[in-house]
Image 1 (tube, rainbow, N blue to C red):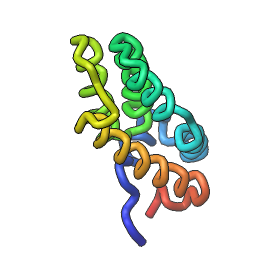
Image 2: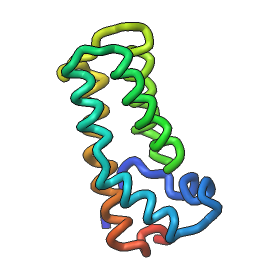
Image 3: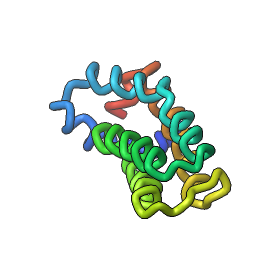
Image 4: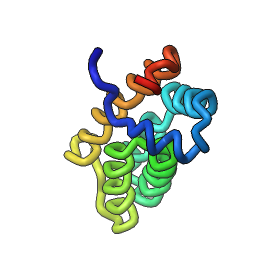
Length: 120
């Protein structure tokens, strides 16, 4: 079986006190969430403050679920927004974040569908 991309399961479980069912539910909510769409809309609007806020929200969720690569990429976008640096859809940081987000949500959805993946 291939690896689960972008998820530090041990870290995520430790944050929720080792409660597998809670962690699976939270990963499922993340997998079906609209974080990337909301961030993409902020980027398209060229509103640096909004970009920073949406990236900050994604960064927080990623940190609380042990989604380490996504956390780091969201931090980079957030910092650009806070510095009033424009972020475009073709920005390398945004492109990497979008790719990471897609792969991570696929992994989160797999865990939601098969919680036994948490213990493999």
